[in-house]
Image (tube, rainbow, N blue to C red; front, top):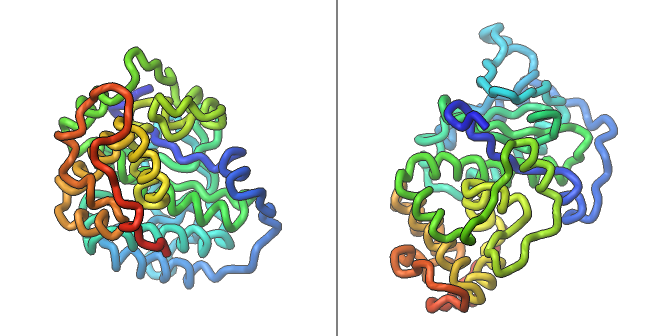
Length: 303
């Protein structure tokens, strides 16, 4: 993988996600959508959060007559998005962006690029991070249906942004490496990582949250980060049972807070306050429960 030019972090919306959702109806030609109405909504969401949103394949802006630019995605192939699915994608994007303090996301992520399909080495992917431009790419193929597109867009906002955090926090990769199983072998290519994503989950004692999480150290961090925002109760349960899960979770929280102190209030609202500032305390120390118990009663209801 040419990681210098493109860190291909992927959020899958394939068989595994479909099974989680219990099966979804395929897109069968959704309602007609006025491109100008969709564009205005995207511009409003972008303005509110200080980030540009590019809808790939939408007709050129009537005011400027120019089509939206394309990011450089080495080895990645994108197709135009169907206008009818854009309200669904924007629902997921808007819901996810609402989790962050005002201005924080856009200060670090220049552009959210929404396309139809996204493939690497012939395999479909749900998203990617383009570090040279600080863009993230979200795929919204029409055949996935409304529920999957909304969920994949929401997860992708968190997942891909966490690669920006990974890149900004210079000591993070080295510290994360100390929390991985000794001798852990990772996927040798993007295609192989995508192939492994629907494999059975690793044993609990590995402290990986999914098969895809185990394909690289950064994918592991990405998966923990997206789960912080979307399933904090799951992480609380696991962190109370497994010392290394608690250590990884604490390191995720502290990495975000170091980048933006206002994230502390966000994590406290998610019920994760007990682990803020604990990443130095929770160092590798073998198996066993975390010495810091997180009270489940602190959790708030997720909207």
